[in-house]
Image (cartoon, rainbow, N blue to C red; front, side, top):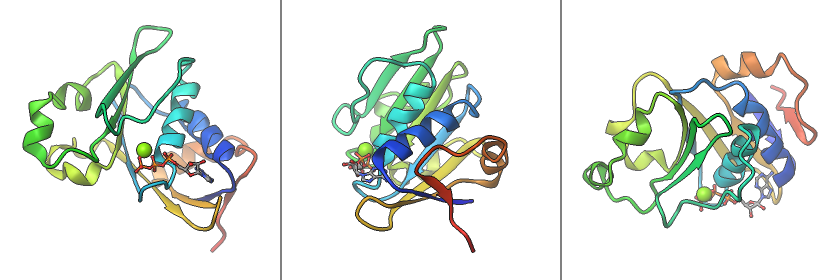
Length: 160
Ligand SMILES: Nc1ncnc2c1ncn2[C@@H]1O[C@H](COP(=O)(O)OP(=O)(O)OP(=O)(O)O)[C@@H](O)[C@H]1O
Ligand SMILES: [Mg+2]
């Protein structure tokens, strides 16, 4: 399903709604260019999981770890500055990709194609459509769950 987000707030709200549809142990990959909204979406997921502390971009830290109110974890990874799989293994990426009691979001997953768990990865794609407009492609299995609820304000399904 292809969605259109009309604002940063709408993408945040979408992330928050999708957070409630994810299962623990699941890895979500966020594909898309610089500034497409991957971190904004991730911040929304964190909010939806009940995390209240500031959610900052992991571009420089590579991983940000957040504890949920029930002690499970939210891991937010950004592979942008990771050159290859060896470098990712060196910092212990497997601890984040295969954590059972965590939800893990990965920005720039293209850097580490061989390391991603198959098939449980849920791939999302965010693309610039216009100034504040973003096209967000979500996989069918997630779309069917999302359709059971009203979409957040500022999010619409792209027709055709
Ligand atoms: N509809 C929208 N959804 C999300 N972000 C939007 C939207 N419209 C405008 N923006 C702006 O686009 C930018 C998205 O930045 P963000 O850091 O989330 O991108 P990113 O995909 O994580 O980039 P990077 O690859 O550099 O990590 C923000 O400045 C945000 O305000
Ligand atoms: Mg980012």
